[in-house]
Length: 153
Image (cartoon, rainbow, N blue to C red; front, side, top):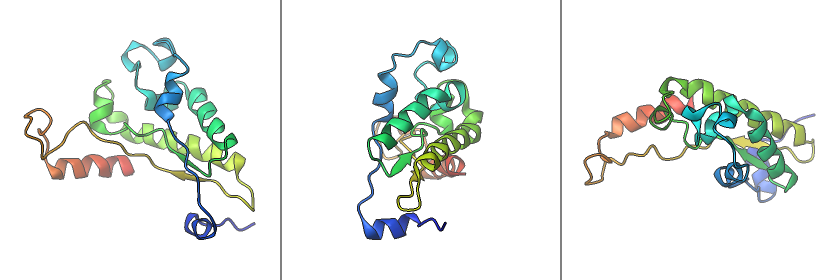
């Protein structure tokens, strides 16, 4: 069975992406313990490591609703954002775990006539080099480039 590439499928039809991972996590009303401890409360992405069942259930619901593409639960999985939870060195581990989880669910729903895809989600870092605010702009373009390079690995 030959699997169509994303671009081949896109030439044939509109592909539907999932959406609202953060809102979906909030609906679970998780306790600090379900996040893996008070330190990780609110770190939705890290649920891929501490409580992957939640993210898997959300991915599954998106597939059941008709999505063709799952976005990884990595919107805030940069060194700066994970650093807010004391785990800046977990960038690779977190992003890898999230990609594997999304791929597992996408593969479960894929068929020869309708393959399912995974896209990496990369959100803001919390910094903006062009801002006038001294805290917000306390980063260089080169630093941002390295932050996203690390996440994309």
